[in-house]
Length: 117
Image (cartoon, rainbow, N blue to C red; front, top):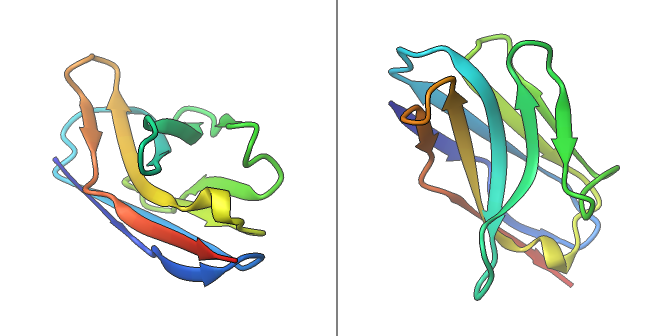
């Protein structure tokens, strides 16, 4: 299984970015997907998650109302629309796919998002 993120970059505060994640080689049933981020010196944290069964979403309080997670028409794609970005959103963003068994837990390589003031 390989997850590839794209869409990161440098943006000014108040701007927007859309991250994409495409999974290949998924031979298992996907239970849920999520975006995590890790800023320098901080632990990796959940940003947003979505279930495969009914598209139920969950967001970190810090991004509610600004970020939107959604799945693409292809079941192995996922996106994160990020609006009203601020400096505190600067981090490496990782996508994650989980199956119904603990061993089915896959991560992308990460994409850097940098927000300048």
